[in-house]
Image (tube, rainbow, N blue to C red; front, side, top):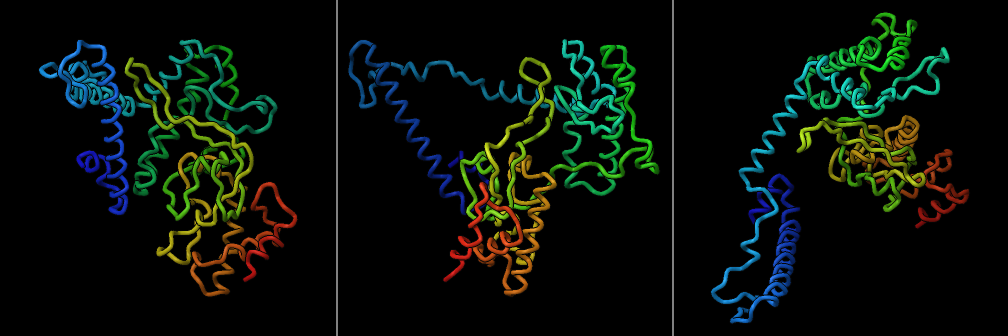
Length: 368
């Protein structure tokens, strides 16, 4: 019961019962394994009076006396506090000091250009700069407050990113600790002179890949992307790789800085995105569609987030909205076969591989 309270007090009350029984099952399994191991150990010791668990009367249990592989609670707490203090110190470093990570990474032997800009680099064409390798233009940890922050605080966070990125580019082109060939390449880069001319060539809006998302009756997860689970009510397809940049730097037990959160896994084939992931749960808002901040896990969102997918989801939501208005029903009450028939008739691809007979199949499903 203490484990339940300590770990799951914030979970909904209707989840407590199954969680309690799961904890109880684990405790029973642990006890059974313990008895088995103790019995095997005792069988190797001199015979004597044993209880039903195999313990010798009057002797100490060697398993009980064995040193714990886990640090004592106080030692563990001190270690966690020390690591937390180091991580906080890293997050509080000024941008110039944070860029020392880049310089130290070069000095450690990583001579790669820390950006994904090939193959257009040097062609005279505009190039989209993308973070790459161990230390790049990403500003891990600086964005955590953004989703819940005030508009004033958001402007501050955006300016922090701008300062960091411009400082990163200047460092790449000017600091003598940067390898010479990379320094020369970086010195040729600059902001487009014909874009955002009223803001020094800098975009007015920061790129927000992911923030708050709705939780629907169906949550798209890595299982959907990898094909181990399939939504029965798809309204669009996704196929891009599950992609996440570094979400934070953390300090290892050895005192080194490590990146955490980098993901790149390509789905084996296109996968369906559930209609229920773009609408609220049953019993919640009845006239809302959410094709952008839809119900997904962090990993699945890294794949679904592509603009063509958002366009397809938005088209499907528009068709569903017309059905809901025409039938005067909540968005949760739309019959999926009827929706699928209309989507297919409009040229929407909702299953892979695409079946030319899909319209007839969905019409059959919709027929009473």
